[in-house]
Image (cartoon, rainbow, N blue to C red):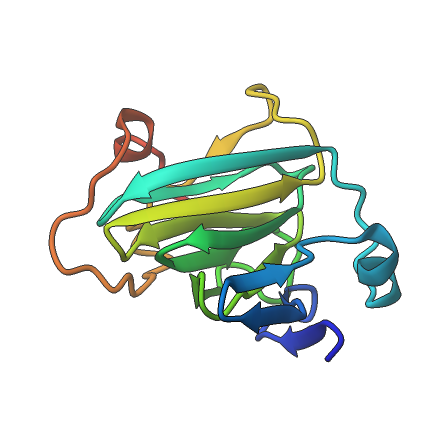
Length: 174
């Protein structure tokens, strides 16, 4: 089966489900091919890859760089991934959507530039992969508080989240 593309509430945001070959040894999947993803309409040039490791109940985000798109996926574990449209001119400004990404569903979330992004680690350990459409540059990096009441993201928390010092003091949008 070829790569599947699933729609979201945002026209620009897509879920890609790569072809996975499983057998008694485990599985193999191609996580990205410029040619195949371009044929599906993803024309971004990804210039940096990053990986994060998180323990259960860690929230990373919400972060964004107005120049940077992302293609993200969970390589191990499960996460609740949240995105919010922070583009002032957008008809979906301040709307959010959440997605469950895990090593079993193999979903890859395309996050366009102008969307804040964060995730909550739901399993004991999560390995999270990012492809970035721009190089990381602290001068362009922005944050929004994870629990901003304007966004009112419904995080599936079981207890108080574990946050970085930076994320604890991230500003509110309004």
